Image 1: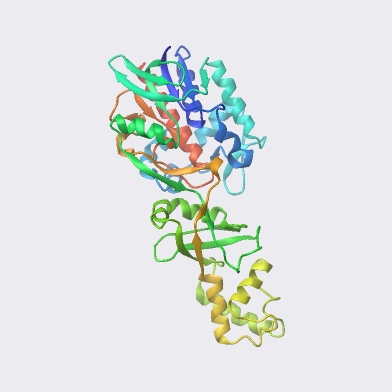
Image 2 (image 1 turned 90 degrees about the horizontal axis):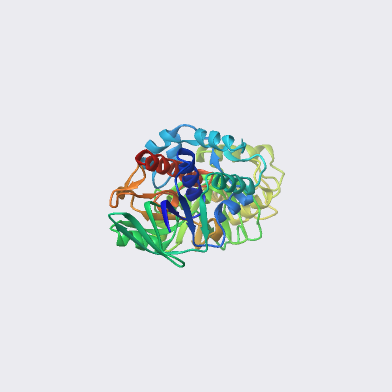
Length: 404
């Protein structure tokens, strides 16, 4: 079967590319080839089933700061199609988005099914063929276009787009075609920590700054204590920016946690001394300060060598300094990582030097395009990975239709 355009990968970037192609030229014969039994699987489970579509960051220069890999390359594309354009695009298809306090944007329905239904309806409108359960096993270029060997039938096309995300077999095919591939490592993972200071404190959350000891790597954001260790936006952000460094360490390293990132050390000492005067008769363990999580305060007080019966008046200077260390420089050993397999994000993929970011066309093979996470682009949580999919998919469609 011959198509004008085949898109390999039935995820967010694949559908967005296909629909934008259909919008620009309804006469194109387009197929989406998906190896799985279900399309848009990652869209369905993203954002806890609500689908974090994008982020309310409308300045491309600010937006690229959320991408540990791909920031420089995405600056130009974001000037072509940014978060505001995403909002308008979905509104055009009847999907209204809302902004949450942290800037994340979701459909007002709070359901990823809304996005899936939107894509399915639009794909049907433009007569896009969706071939599920079909895996591509070989890719060959000729003077007439592209030939694909699949698990079912052979297929040919004039223009070929890969939007397969983190797929080692596809990366190998692209290597065989002459592309460089940056070795993939996990990004956006949580830290496995066994430490008596946080055991049985699942669900406790508080702002924190986390540093990887012996490096310049640090991140600030909400930290969530879990039954396996530490998670939350602050930890995930650190894992994204440190994806390669932490892989080199084989996920065994030490972190320093500042539970009071809004205070410098001198201010903290002054406040503790003032508290010591004001609440002299109160026990330290039961009379915490800084609106700090009670159970965590009790653990850190104990870790500082302060007994349950010690009052603020009895607190000596050595104990006070030990408490300061626990509050702002607590050291924790990380032994491994945990990932949410369904929402797995990878640092790695097609080397960005092999792609023209004005068109998303390969510099190695003409009429071959890439969009989404197949590229060595990834972001922290908050809708940014999807925005990469929308932007690169849009540019791909724009480039292909301008040549047709």
